Length: 395
Image (cartoon, rainbow, N blue to C red; front, side, top):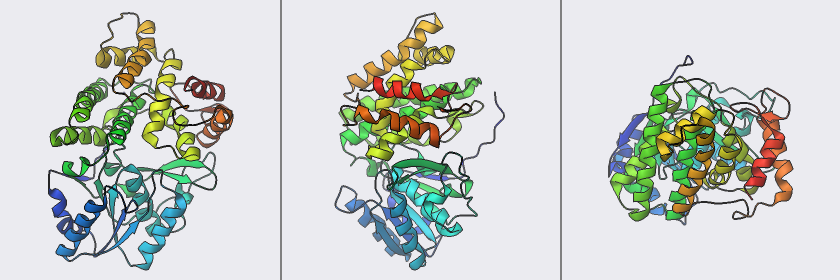
């Protein structure tokens, strides 16, 4: 195993109806909150009303910022930061999915530390600005996907350049994640599918990218994958089932918390390869991961065949004894699962043209460079040519 440090500083408040406790919780962390959320006019409107009512009842002042996009845009977050400062807020309440919660982390930390949100992201050889602190964050997830409600990471998109990147800071852990499964039942089925497979991508990313061995991390990850797969079927049958929504929410949270990588934390090549899809074309991140996972799993199976084979056997019922053969079967089984749940997608399905593959691959190796020229980090360096090949296999 690798050496590691890990903590989980976010208080997780779970249960049906606990959204009503928001006001009393917020009162512990600030006097005036900014509610950061999506634009009004959608399925979240009644939940926004509930949040505002709870704060009002508790005597907590608030200012509501609506309009954070999927794949949150840096210029939008900068507007929110300006409003946060102008209104004298001292607490951010993130209400929404991973995009809103990621954006809220930039609001809280950039509002405290100064500058613009994009100053802090990883971008090739550029040295990002470092945070000096952050205002408190309370996250209220309305979608189970990224696990952002309990971690310190966050993505951001530069709409002017089409670049999408990320940053991470211990200052940005939410103080509290208020997880009310009743809020998750309003998510449409298509979005639920995308979100479940986003969780899957998080669970397998470190599992398949590290040369280290950690049986504890493997077993934790495998258990979450099996729980996810079982409850994915159930949520498609009964989207209003709170028990199922709760199980998926826990897979989301702990699937990107570091717990799934203890002792063998790896890199995230699949996510790097997906970034141009959502950065340039504004494709929802979960949909992008559905597109890139199968070809990545197929093309890279010979890099760490023992780990590919282990996952195929333990989670997908593969019984082949030869690691090299079993490793190749992982992508086959994943595609079968995607198709059985009507989740499988190609680049053609999401209208991304083949004439942009070179540009997309250039962005990956420029923004997330590997140890060798024209590569991105992976279980071994993934070359630009291989990235183009993965996009070609996605058509």
